[in-house]
Image (tube, rainbow, N blue to C red; front, side, top):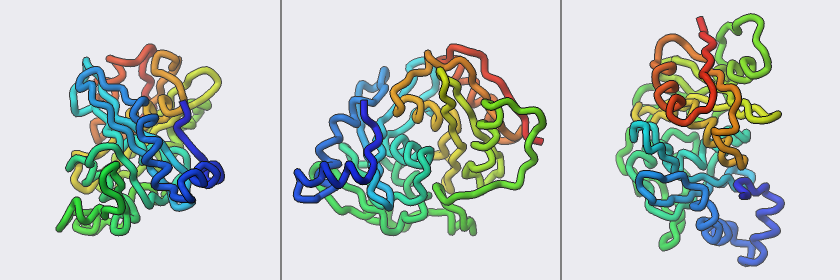
Length: 265
Protein backbone atom coordinates (compact mmCIF):
# COMPACT_ATOMS: atom_id res chain seq x y z
CA UNK A 1 0.00 0.00 0.00
CA UNK A 2 1.21 3.48 -0.87
CA UNK A 3 2.51 5.32 2.22
CA UNK A 4 4.56 8.13 0.68
CA UNK A 5 3.35 10.57 -1.97
CA UNK A 6 5.98 12.92 -3.42
CA UNK A 7 5.10 16.57 -3.88
CA UNK A 8 4.67 16.43 -7.67
CA UNK A 9 2.11 13.66 -7.32
CA UNK A 10 0.41 15.53 -4.48
CA UNK A 11 0.03 18.54 -6.74
CA UNK A 12 -1.39 16.42 -9.55
CA UNK A 13 -3.87 14.60 -7.31
CA UNK A 14 -4.89 17.80 -5.51
CA UNK A 15 -6.24 19.14 -8.81
CA UNK A 16 -9.36 17.05 -8.18
CA UNK A 17 -9.82 19.08 -4.97
CA UNK A 18 -9.31 22.49 -6.60
CA UNK A 19 -5.66 22.41 -5.59
CA UNK A 20 -6.48 21.91 -1.90
CA UNK A 21 -3.82 19.52 -0.59
CA UNK A 22 -5.44 19.35 2.86
CA UNK A 23 -8.70 18.18 1.32
CA UNK A 24 -6.70 15.56 -0.58
CA UNK A 25 -4.98 14.42 2.63
CA UNK A 26 -8.31 14.19 4.46
CA UNK A 27 -9.64 11.98 1.67
CA UNK A 28 -6.65 9.65 2.08
CA UNK A 29 -7.03 9.12 5.83
CA UNK A 30 -9.02 5.86 5.42
CA UNK A 31 -6.06 4.48 3.44
CA UNK A 32 -3.62 5.55 6.15
CA UNK A 33 -5.80 3.96 8.84
CA UNK A 34 -5.60 0.62 7.00
CA UNK A 35 -1.89 0.56 7.92
CA UNK A 36 -2.69 0.36 11.64
CA UNK A 37 -1.55 -2.71 13.59
CA UNK A 38 -4.02 -2.83 16.48
CA UNK A 39 -4.46 -6.32 17.99
CA UNK A 40 -5.36 -4.81 21.38
CA UNK A 41 -7.62 -1.81 20.74
CA UNK A 42 -8.97 -2.60 17.27
CA UNK A 43 -9.00 1.21 16.95
CA UNK A 44 -7.54 2.33 13.63
CA UNK A 45 -5.92 5.76 13.59
CA UNK A 46 -4.43 7.12 10.38
CA UNK A 47 -2.31 10.24 10.03
CA UNK A 48 -0.50 12.09 7.27
CA UNK A 49 2.45 14.41 7.91
CA UNK A 50 3.08 17.08 5.28
CA UNK A 51 6.58 18.49 5.05
CA UNK A 52 7.74 21.93 4.00
CA UNK A 53 7.99 20.86 0.35
CA UNK A 54 4.50 19.35 0.24
CA UNK A 55 5.37 15.64 0.40
CA UNK A 56 2.87 13.32 2.15
CA UNK A 57 4.03 10.73 4.70
CA UNK A 58 1.46 8.24 5.99
CA UNK A 59 1.39 6.92 9.55
CA UNK A 60 -0.80 4.70 11.69
CA UNK A 61 -0.96 3.46 15.27
CA UNK A 62 0.89 0.23 16.07
CA UNK A 63 0.45 -2.10 19.04
CA UNK A 64 1.86 -5.42 20.22
CA UNK A 65 -0.53 -7.69 22.12
CA UNK A 66 2.25 -9.45 24.05
CA UNK A 67 4.34 -6.39 24.98
CA UNK A 68 3.81 -3.46 27.31
CA UNK A 69 1.40 -0.74 26.17
CA UNK A 70 4.34 1.61 26.65
CA UNK A 71 5.81 0.15 23.45
CA UNK A 72 2.89 1.49 21.37
CA UNK A 73 3.46 3.91 18.49
CA UNK A 74 0.75 6.53 17.99
CA UNK A 75 -0.34 7.49 14.48
CA UNK A 76 1.08 11.01 14.68
CA UNK A 77 4.41 9.60 15.91
CA UNK A 78 4.32 7.11 13.06
CA UNK A 79 3.76 9.79 10.40
CA UNK A 80 6.41 12.14 11.81
CA UNK A 81 9.06 9.45 12.26
CA UNK A 82 8.27 8.15 8.77
CA UNK A 83 8.95 11.65 7.43
CA UNK A 84 12.13 11.92 9.50
CA UNK A 85 13.51 8.64 8.20
CA UNK A 86 12.84 9.75 4.63
CA UNK A 87 14.80 12.97 5.16
CA UNK A 88 12.17 15.58 6.04
CA UNK A 89 13.43 18.43 8.23
CA UNK A 90 10.17 20.40 8.64
CA UNK A 91 6.57 19.38 9.19
CA UNK A 92 3.98 22.06 8.45
CA UNK A 93 0.74 20.07 8.76
CA UNK A 94 -0.59 16.97 10.49
CA UNK A 95 -3.80 15.47 9.12
CA UNK A 96 -5.39 12.81 11.34
CA UNK A 97 -8.74 11.05 11.60
CA UNK A 98 -9.11 11.51 15.39
CA UNK A 99 -8.22 14.35 17.73
CA UNK A 100 -4.60 13.95 18.91
CA UNK A 101 -4.23 12.64 22.44
CA UNK A 102 -2.15 14.50 25.03
CA UNK A 103 0.82 12.19 24.41
CA UNK A 104 0.87 13.12 20.72
CA UNK A 105 0.38 16.81 21.38
CA UNK A 106 3.51 16.78 23.53
CA UNK A 107 5.39 14.70 20.96
CA UNK A 108 4.54 17.21 18.22
CA UNK A 109 5.73 20.05 20.44
CA UNK A 110 9.29 18.80 19.92
CA UNK A 111 9.19 19.77 16.22
CA UNK A 112 11.08 22.85 14.99
CA UNK A 113 7.88 24.42 13.64
CA UNK A 114 5.65 23.50 16.57
CA UNK A 115 4.61 27.13 16.94
CA UNK A 116 3.09 27.25 13.46
CA UNK A 117 2.12 23.58 13.05
CA UNK A 118 -1.43 23.09 11.77
CA UNK A 119 -3.58 20.10 12.71
CA UNK A 120 -6.46 19.09 10.46
CA UNK A 121 -9.31 16.73 11.37
CA UNK A 122 -12.23 15.49 9.25
CA UNK A 123 -14.54 17.84 11.14
CA UNK A 124 -12.13 20.74 11.84
CA UNK A 125 -9.29 22.22 9.80
CA UNK A 126 -6.45 24.68 10.45
CA UNK A 127 -6.15 24.13 14.19
CA UNK A 128 -2.87 25.24 15.75
CA UNK A 129 -0.91 22.94 18.01
CA UNK A 130 -0.92 25.77 20.56
CA UNK A 131 -4.72 25.58 20.70
CA UNK A 132 -4.44 21.91 21.68
CA UNK A 133 -1.51 22.47 24.04
CA UNK A 134 -1.85 25.87 25.74
CA UNK A 135 0.88 27.06 28.13
CA UNK A 136 2.99 24.17 26.89
CA UNK A 137 6.22 22.67 28.20
CA UNK A 138 8.89 22.49 25.50
CA UNK A 139 12.65 22.09 24.94
CA UNK A 140 13.17 25.80 25.61
CA UNK A 141 12.07 25.25 29.23
CA UNK A 142 15.12 23.02 29.61
CA UNK A 143 17.36 25.43 27.69
CA UNK A 144 17.65 22.97 24.82
CA UNK A 145 17.91 24.55 21.35
CA UNK A 146 17.75 21.23 19.46
CA UNK A 147 14.50 20.07 17.87
CA UNK A 148 13.34 16.77 16.43
CA UNK A 149 13.96 16.56 12.64
CA UNK A 150 16.73 19.19 12.78
CA UNK A 151 19.80 17.57 11.17
CA UNK A 152 22.56 16.74 13.65
CA UNK A 153 25.82 14.77 13.61
CA UNK A 154 26.95 13.72 17.07
CA UNK A 155 30.68 13.58 17.74
CA UNK A 156 30.80 9.95 18.80
CA UNK A 157 33.56 7.48 18.01
CA UNK A 158 32.72 4.85 15.44
CA UNK A 159 33.50 1.27 16.54
CA UNK A 160 35.94 -0.57 14.31
CA UNK A 161 35.30 -3.23 11.65
CA UNK A 162 31.58 -2.61 11.16
CA UNK A 163 29.71 -4.43 8.40
CA UNK A 164 26.97 -2.71 6.35
CA UNK A 165 24.15 -3.34 8.83
CA UNK A 166 26.26 -2.29 11.82
CA UNK A 167 27.40 0.82 9.93
CA UNK A 168 23.77 1.72 9.22
CA UNK A 169 22.89 1.34 12.91
CA UNK A 170 25.84 3.54 13.89
CA UNK A 171 24.84 6.21 11.37
CA UNK A 172 21.34 6.19 12.86
CA UNK A 173 22.74 6.63 16.37
CA UNK A 174 25.01 9.41 15.18
CA UNK A 175 22.02 11.38 13.86
CA UNK A 176 19.43 10.60 16.56
CA UNK A 177 17.64 13.19 18.70
CA UNK A 178 18.96 12.77 22.25
CA UNK A 179 19.69 16.24 23.67
CA UNK A 180 18.43 15.45 27.18
CA UNK A 181 20.27 12.23 28.07
CA UNK A 182 22.87 11.96 25.30
CA UNK A 183 22.03 8.27 25.31
CA UNK A 184 22.57 7.88 21.57
CA UNK A 185 20.94 4.95 19.82
CA UNK A 186 20.10 3.69 16.36
CA UNK A 187 19.01 0.37 14.92
CA UNK A 188 19.19 -1.39 11.56
CA UNK A 189 16.77 -4.07 10.37
CA UNK A 190 17.83 -6.16 7.37
CA UNK A 191 14.98 -7.45 5.20
CA UNK A 192 15.91 -8.93 1.84
CA UNK A 193 18.39 -6.61 0.15
CA UNK A 194 17.24 -3.55 2.11
CA UNK A 195 18.29 -2.05 5.43
CA UNK A 196 15.67 -0.12 7.39
CA UNK A 197 16.98 2.11 10.14
CA UNK A 198 15.48 3.78 13.17
CA UNK A 199 16.76 6.65 15.29
CA UNK A 200 16.10 7.44 18.94
CA UNK A 201 13.77 10.45 19.35
CA UNK A 202 13.73 12.03 22.81
CA UNK A 203 11.12 14.45 24.09
CA UNK A 204 11.31 17.30 26.60
CA UNK A 205 8.59 15.62 28.65
CA UNK A 206 10.54 12.31 28.47
CA UNK A 207 7.56 9.88 28.26
CA UNK A 208 6.60 10.68 24.63
CA UNK A 209 10.13 9.64 23.64
CA UNK A 210 10.16 7.20 20.71
CA UNK A 211 12.68 4.31 20.85
CA UNK A 212 14.75 3.49 17.76
CA UNK A 213 13.22 0.04 17.24
CA UNK A 214 9.73 1.50 16.89
CA UNK A 215 11.03 4.05 14.38
CA UNK A 216 12.65 1.28 12.30
CA UNK A 217 9.64 -1.05 12.46
CA UNK A 218 7.43 1.83 11.42
CA UNK A 219 9.61 2.53 8.36
CA UNK A 220 9.68 -1.19 7.55
CA UNK A 221 5.89 -1.41 7.68
CA UNK A 222 5.37 1.85 5.79
CA UNK A 223 7.61 0.35 3.09
CA UNK A 224 5.30 -2.64 2.73
CA UNK A 225 7.21 -5.20 4.80
CA UNK A 226 6.78 -7.03 8.10
CA UNK A 227 9.04 -7.95 11.00
CA UNK A 228 8.80 -11.62 9.98
CA UNK A 229 10.98 -10.72 6.97
CA UNK A 230 13.83 -9.33 9.09
CA UNK A 231 16.93 -11.54 9.08
CA UNK A 232 19.21 -9.26 11.14
CA UNK A 233 18.52 -6.66 13.80
CA UNK A 234 21.47 -4.54 14.98
CA UNK A 235 21.19 -2.04 17.83
CA UNK A 236 24.01 0.50 18.22
CA UNK A 237 23.77 2.44 21.47
CA UNK A 238 25.35 3.83 24.60
CA UNK A 239 25.40 1.65 27.70
CA UNK A 240 23.30 4.19 29.59
CA UNK A 241 19.73 5.01 28.62
CA UNK A 242 18.17 1.55 28.93
CA UNK A 243 18.16 0.92 25.18
CA UNK A 244 19.17 -2.73 25.28
CA UNK A 245 16.45 -3.72 27.77
CA UNK A 246 13.75 -1.67 26.06
CA UNK A 247 14.62 -3.00 22.62
CA UNK A 248 14.87 -6.62 23.73
CA UNK A 249 11.51 -6.42 25.49
CA UNK A 250 9.75 -5.69 22.20
CA UNK A 251 12.00 -7.54 19.77
CA UNK A 252 11.70 -10.77 21.76
CA UNK A 253 7.95 -10.61 21.11
CA UNK A 254 7.89 -9.71 17.43
CA UNK A 255 11.32 -10.48 16.01
CA UNK A 256 12.31 -13.58 14.04
CA UNK A 257 16.08 -13.30 14.65
CA UNK A 258 18.46 -12.50 17.48
CA UNK A 259 19.15 -8.90 18.42
CA UNK A 260 22.80 -7.90 17.95
CA UNK A 261 24.34 -5.11 20.04
CA UNK A 262 27.13 -2.70 19.05
CA UNK A 263 28.15 -0.59 22.03
CA UNK A 264 29.17 3.03 21.85
CA UNK A 265 31.97 3.79 24.31
